[in-house]
Length: 422
Image 1 (cartoon, rainbow, N blue to C red):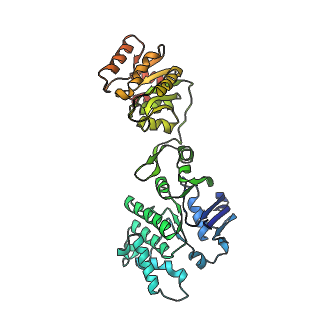
Image 2: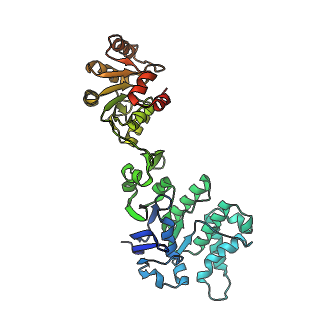
Image 3: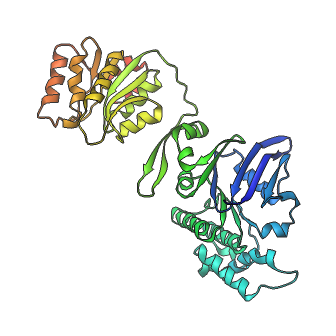
């Protein structure tokens, strides 16, 4: 069983009378890769400042390897834990290798110089961040991204048991962001370095972490494995955005796809139900417009993974689903029929019809008396005319109406939203 290396015990910290982090507790074991995520201003970096002594605690304690962090001498603490700050101010023209050499100071006796072994460690640390070729360059001559990698090298030169990263890829482009995160994970797995990282990139946290802690408004709201945290019901209320979580089969990790902010969305229900038949993105604008206009929206039948399906999941819209590339089965058909009969109106988007979704059109013949609106402009019929024949019959006998601008405006009660669907 791994030993505890870092523990926050009911920590409250802030500036002046303002409490930024409130009653925070968590334990990190040796060998873990733990990420701390949360919106800007939630207190993530403030927690890091308590580790370095930059910010005194208002209450609670921090323990490092079982010892009260406030009682550990600075030099001894630096032999255990290294911190990579979010920002580094380097106004003096030190060479890169001299900056990294500062990471060896906790191990040097007073007035002593670096040994041959120290210089080997310095070059090793530079190599870990791909900056060995910059060792003779002055820090003032380096780009922001290059400086950040040098500071990470200085932390690695401490040969720490615990590496604390405060948004370590903040100044890096996507190439170096990925490279640094891969190297951090490798050091974690092969060298046994425990990593506690503040990350703003949720997908990076999901890909490289063993565990994720979610901080919001200064309080811990969740702490668990990647699969427990990277979920729509966990992240939506914290970040106040609509998003979809899906499995990335290339990285073998879940990832989020942000869709829109819902921070200012004011939605009043109108007590009406609409069922939308769509697919392939044909219904996305309609789904969102009817949802925002106060309708209780349902959709179906949609293939799992379809873009309209993903939007429904993001908005919490009821969706009748079928396996991808399969024709609509009897179970989904009956569920769809139930949803149609319970709706106040039915809207058919301008969706292509083929064998797999033909039953979405055939089912319209079973709901006589419902308000049915059909949009048929650019969509194609791959059923040898069967789908279009049903649509023409419904329109001809008055069982359905063609969906145009005037009808949209009336249904949505908002001409601007209706215009966006044209």
